[in-house]
Structures are given as structure tokens and as C-alpha cells.
Amino acid sequence: MIGFDEAIALIAANAGPLSKELVSLEQAHGRTLAEPVLARVPSPPFDASAMDGYAVRDVDLAHIPAALSIAGESFAGSPYDGPLKPGECARIFTGAAVPAGADRVIVQEVAERRGDQALFSEPLPSARHIRRAGSDFEAGDLLLDAGTYLHPRALVAAAAADVKELRVWRRPRVMVLGTGDELAEPGTARDIPGSIPESVSFGAAGIAADWSADFLGSVRLADDLREMESAAAFAVRDSDLVVVTGGASVGDKDFAKAMFEPLGLEFIFSKVGIKPGKPVWFGRARSLLVMGLPGNPTSALVTARLFLAPLLARLCGRQVHAALLWRSAPLATPLGACGERETFHRARWKGGSVDILSNQDSSAQKALAQADLLVRQRANASAISPGELVEVLDF
View 1 (cartoon, rainbow, N blue to C red):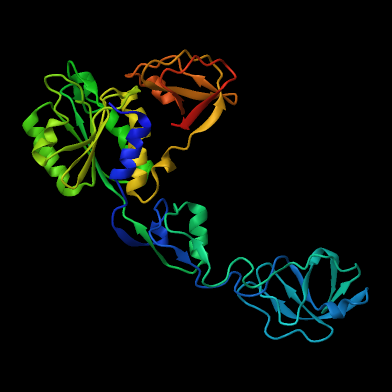
View 2 (cartoon, rainbow, N blue to C red; view 1 turned 180 degrees about the vertical axis):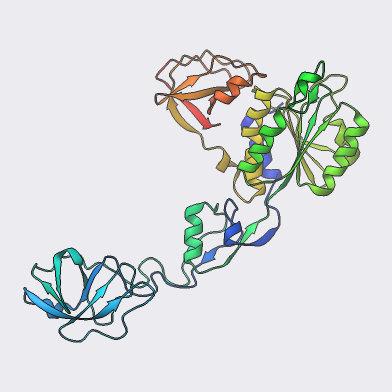
């Protein structure tokens, strides 16, 4: 049995980005760049006004007060045609091209318009209110490096580069196989004696979506080895990653691992020394990656957050640590000493501190919905008092 950090290192070493593909800007949100984005145009492409007002020449306002003839107007997308002549100014609006010969833009609040003239009675301010051509970036500048996650701000920069399509890493195709004779489709369990609603696959699917995977769907499987082997063989054809829930213990019908043996399952790790979630496992069957999550809902979702999310980040072209952004926060409630297994406690924010939930049972589902943090407590760590800092991860 290995530790948490060792398991994460094995995920990083055994999973990598998939193939590249070209997508439109409209399809790029949540993807990861496979190639850098270089600007094809400067920004701004011309000297542009930063304010509504009047474009003027300094020489014409050497003596204040002064009156200048309004030679024309410059709008964004419809610039004034021609340079300013002595004694002229141009009405200009934010984003419009500054006429040739103009040195500054005087904001409209300090000018007075009388017919075809603009009157200036205040001394020239220090601000020129002109965005110079290329002051943001020049053509050929690197705007986004390979490996950049395409959040909305990055998409703005990509569009400003005047590119229509981006080369990104393909989304991993993920299927969930839920195992257990006792599992019933939600909405039907109350009519089937001895059954419980299957819930874990929905959480696993949500994490897959959160981390930019292409979710292919989930299949509920009875504890029948032949049926499970058929499902595994089908998954190999269409998926990059299969997530198996349940059946990872030592019972007579725990076939979650055995179902992949005809496909040459090789374990990368088979157990991790953590609580909850010790039975989590990770392997490869031919070209398919397989991750097994415990059947208990809390254990499954904790291990999915800790191991599935970093795995998906890696398959999408990011680093595993993009999914493991630990930070320190003060504890609101006391935490007892930790045992031999590193423990991840479910908690929630409460008044700027970390409130450990009272129900830490691995099958709890109401408490799972209340948790928005995981608190990491190292193996054999001493008790922690309120006010002390703990490691937390958004859950």
C-alpha cells in the first residue's frame, strides 16, 4: 500500500495528454492549449482614443483660452479621414482612431461646443487619453503559451490575437461502470426490496464534466462476472478512461478488478493508505486507463476529487497539481490526532474558518452535500486546536 503523494506521482507518470485537435474559439472554453497563440495583429492596431472628447494638436492650445474648428468626427469603426490642420480639432469617441497630427484627446467635460467650434478654457492636463498602437501587444508577440487552460480571460486574449481556431488537446472520453446487485436506478429503488439508489456515478460524471472530459455515459452492472467482462470489453473500444465504482473489496462478488483481467489489466497502484478511500486503485487494460473508486458514496467522491480530477487534468494537457491547489486556513473546530492512515476530513467554510463536519462516515450522503472543503491531516499527526492552520482543498 502506497501513500497519497506517491499515488499522485504515479498518475502523473502514467497519464499524459491525448491527441491534438483544432477547434473554433466558440468550442474552446475549458480546453487546454496544445500549441502557443501568437498575435497576428498589434493591439490596438492604431492610436485609439481612451475617452469621449476632442482630438487636438498641442500647438493649437499653447495659449488658453482657445477656440478650434471642429473638422469632423471619429467613431470606432468609422475614423476621421485626413490629418488635422492648424486650428482644427475632431470630435472623437472611445475606441476611435486618433486623426493624424493629433497629440491628445481632451475629455468632453472640460470643453464647450458652440456650433462648429470647440472652446477650451482650462490648462492642458497631463493625461493624453490615447492608447498607442501596439501598446498592449505587437504582432508576433506570445499571448498564450502551450498548456494554458482556456478560461474566459484567456479566450479574450486569443480572440484579440485575431485567430479563429485553436490547437488544443482532445478531451478524454470517460465511461462510468457502477457495480453492485443492490443498486437501482434512482426513482425505482423504493419499489425493489433490498435495493438502494445508485448515486456515485452521478458524482463521478459531474467531476468528469468539471475537468473537461467528454462523458460517454454510465452503465449499472449486477455482480455477474460474465456480464461485467462484456461491459469492460465494450468500454475499451470507445473510452480513454473507465471509472469503476464499487466491488473493490474482498467479497465473493467483488469483480471490479477481475472484469478487466481478460484485457490484460496491469495495476499502477492497488490501494492507497488514506482514509476514507483505501480501496481506490488505478491501472491499464490495453490502451485503456481504469480507475476504481470505492462503493461508499463519501469514499467514492473523496477519492474522485483526490485522484480522478488530477488524472483528468493530466489527460487534458494540464499538470496533476492544477487539480490539487492546497492552501492553509484556520480551523474552527478541534481535530483529534490522526491514525496510521493519512485522513481527508469533510468540512465547510464557516465565518472564514474551517468547520469539520460531525458525520465523517464513508457512506454519508447528506453530509457529503454539505461539504465544500477537504482537510488534509497527515498520518500520525497530533491533535489540532481551533485557530491553528490546516491544509484545505476545494471539494
